[in-house]
Image (tube, rainbow, N blue to C red; front, top):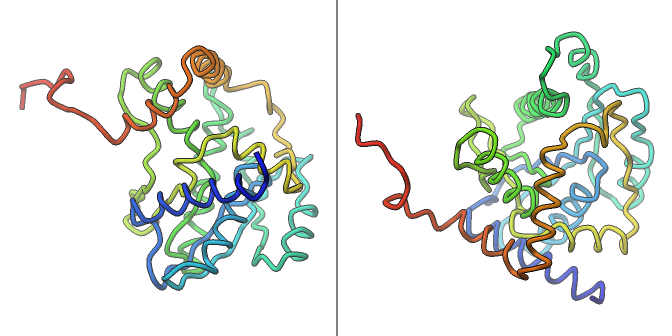
Length: 249
């Protein structure tokens, strides 16, 4: 697909999601979590394009949370953002030290790190006065999480497009929730975003369950084209009367 058509497709789906779920309002200050991966780069770039076209006025800044992993480099991100006029800053944290010191046997390294990173983002948003935190989770993330929840925790849940944090203040939005990973991967490659490794010591080793679910969905989509889109649609079409709801108070 031509780059202009691919970009138009991603922008259309992102804009539709923002409007459908009321993600961004007039006067919002949006903080994009820029990890340096293909998803967060696509999110930042597309939100900036939409910001310039939007009927509402909002601010857009990006933050890279440095987790303290020895191999993580922020210079490519800083240089790219500076060259293109993106408002960006780096927040150093002690995530690596905390994970190494407090992780219990059997605890997922990725899950623990993710919770700590989210806490850092919440703190930044409160400190700097941001009204929304934008994460780069895409459509595949949502349906993979749905299956992981059903398979391994016995729950029907996923990643909501808009999440109001338990602290009563922070709001997380996922503008790419209707964009599939294959389009993001193709777009990031053509755009030449400086994708960087997070430097995590277990990167590519942990989260085998998600890898298995991703492979399962890839196989199903190959055999039955459109099945992922159907699963994504099902997240907004829940028929509670046909589930096993207990009558007990």
